[in-house]
Length: 262
Image 1 (spheres, rainbow, N blue to C red):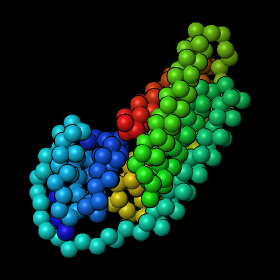
Image 2 (image 1 turned 90 degrees about the vertical axis):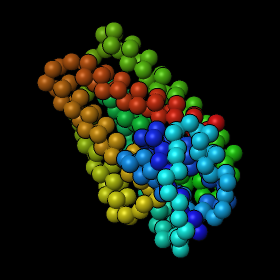
Image 3 (image 1 turned 180 degrees about the horizontal axis):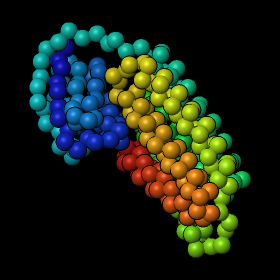
Image 4 (image 1 turned 135 degrees about the vertical axis):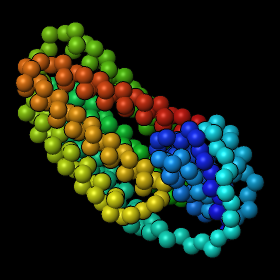
């Protein structure tokens, strides 16, 4: 078995990782992909194949082969454990999507509505990871495109509503609902992150899931902070600002998912 180590100079987030995975996964010679996003490194365990380097270069992410060696390789990953963990994280995210969107509509909080869409976006990502097992690449690309367009549409609608409320005379949102629901969402994401980290998996999609969940915790904290600012300033603007930022995050994620589907 051959171990090839590449540097990917423009790989700085999970979206580039997933783009690389979708580009390489149809190569039957590949046995394992190991990503190190902070160091921008990719390790490919494979048999002889002349396609890997050319496909990486075609992505335009600045790939360069640094090292290649012969190894004895045996997969140590437990796919059953990973699948169960991804299902848990997916169901928690999907459940809190419904909780936050209902709470957002009742309380009038754009921060909660935006966070609910972020939860939905993450649920799509985890769902695509689960779908990837034994699925045809064309099918995965179609699902990615559907989820990307849906997120894009919802994020744009959300941003339009933020602008309308910014210049309108809407009352400021219920900060109590914002804070309470976001605290529960923060706790749920902390549990997800604990479970993912406890798995000690080095698999690419598991590491990506940890990054997504860490980002969710930051967003939850932001909505809590917005709720406190609404309380102390008696103003709707902190909620609209955090809502705008989260909608932009969802919009950026949707564009990247659409890029993956091509």
